[in-house]
Image (tube, rainbow, N blue to C red; front, side):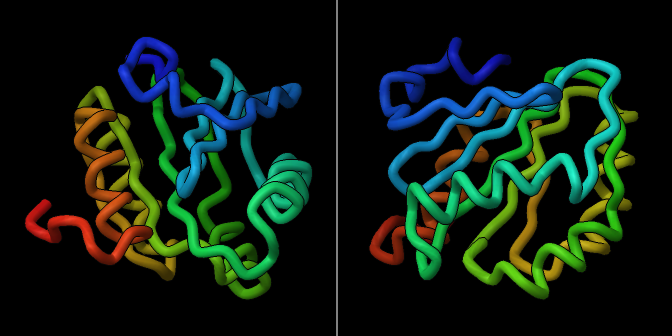
Amino acid sequence: MNFLDTNYAEQVKKTLELPQATFYFLEDLIIGEIDEGSHYNMKNALPLVKAAKDFYGKNAQIGYISNRVNNYTVSPRDWMNFYKENRYLKAVALVCYTPTKYSKGTFEKMFIPTQTKQFSCLETAILWARTKTRPNLDKSL
């Protein structure tokens, strides 16, 4: 499910369209949808990092949701390098709609040094991520 097809789309505060991806900034979350056939790495992510720091501030505690509606590849080791310099991610959710994407996500989780969980439903991923960015929400997810 594309993010814009959810009830959460009305919560978008900013949309960032880059050559290989679209990112939706909510109050405490970024939801990313990488384009079909792209290879996403740290170099591609630098404009996102700058936009996120400008939007949320450099000390914000936010969640990131990778909504994997398309087929693409990532450089998992870049997550380690990213996290060394950017410790504002409280949680990462990987929304995987096929068994192949789920398997790739399981591998990538090994390289993400923050709370990370996989989902098959975008809305459930949003609820979970918000329990990490908003401490007073129900932690049962």
